[in-house]
Amino acid sequence: MQLPSAKDTIFSQPHEAVGAFQFDASVAAVFPDMIQRSVPGYQTILTGIGELTKRHAQPHTRLYDLGCSLGAASLTMRRVVDQTYGCSIVAVDNSPAMLQRAQEYIQAFHSEVPLSLHCADICDFPIDNASVVVINFTLQFIAPDARLALLKRIYNGLLPGGILLLSEKIHFNDAALQASIEHLHLQFKRANGYSELEISQKRSSLENVLISDSEAQHLQRLKAAGFTEAGIWFQAYNFAAFLAIKS
Ligand code: GEK
Image 1 (cartoon, rainbow, N blue to C red):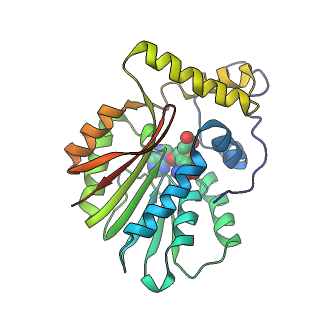
Image 2: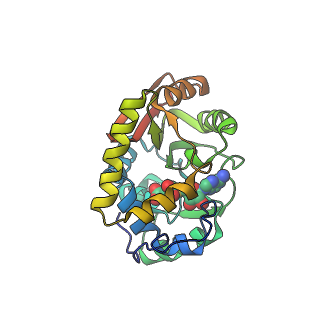
Image 3: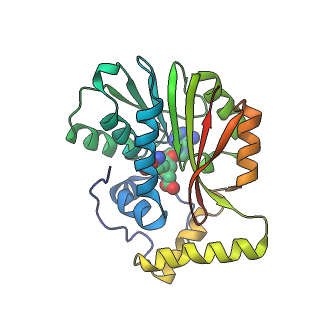
C-alpha cells in the first residue's frame, strides 16, 4: 500500500544543533516519502506482510500493527483479509501526529474490516487473541532492555499457529562487513536524492534513538520469548524482515 506524501526536506538545510529525532507533525507530513527513500525493500516488505497475513490470519482474531505510523501495514492487512473472516485490525502508535494522519488515510480507503487506532506505548498495550502481529521498524526505537518483555507479551497474546512479522535495521558485528553494507545503504539514499548534509544530519538525529541489533541478537531474543521457529524472510542490505511462528 503506497501512501501519497509530500517530499521529505526536513534535514535539507543546516540545523544549528541537530536534536534527537522525534515522530512529530513535520515528520508525519512527509513520512511515506521519508521511509520509502530511506529503507531499501520497504515496499516489498509491505507486500510480504500482505501475503503472509493472507496465509496466516485466522477467523475471528485480531491482527496487530505495533508502531503503525500512518498505517501502511494496517491498510495492507485490511486489504487482504476477507471481511467474512471476522478479523479486526488493531493499530497502535504513541505519536499523536502520526495517528492524526493515519486516521485520514484510513478514512480515505473504504473497507468493511474493522480497524481501530490507539495512541499508546506498545510496551504496555494489551495483546490478545492475535493471529498476526506486525512490528515494522519499531522495535529498534524501544529501549533495548524492554524488548524481550515486549516480545514475550506478543508471544503470549498470539494463538497457536499465529505469527510475528518483525522488520528492523540490523548491524553486523564484523567491522568490514558492516562498513560495506552501510555503504550500500548510503548509496541507496544518495540515489534517492538525499544530499550528504541530509544524510549526516539525519544520522546524528537518530543516534541513541534508533538502536539496532544484529541478526543473531534478534533470533536469540525471539527464541527467549518462546518462538521455536524464526528466520529472515527478506533482507535488503542492513534491513531485515523476520518471521516467527508460534507452534
Ligand atoms: C510502517 N510501521 O510504515 N509505542 C508506540 N509507538 C512507538 C513507540 C512506542 N514505545 N516508539 C516508537 N513508536 C511503520 C513504520 S516508524 C519506523 C514505523 C521509522 C512509533 C513512532 O511514533 C513511529 O511512528 C514508529 O514507531 C516507527 O510500516 O520511522 O523508521
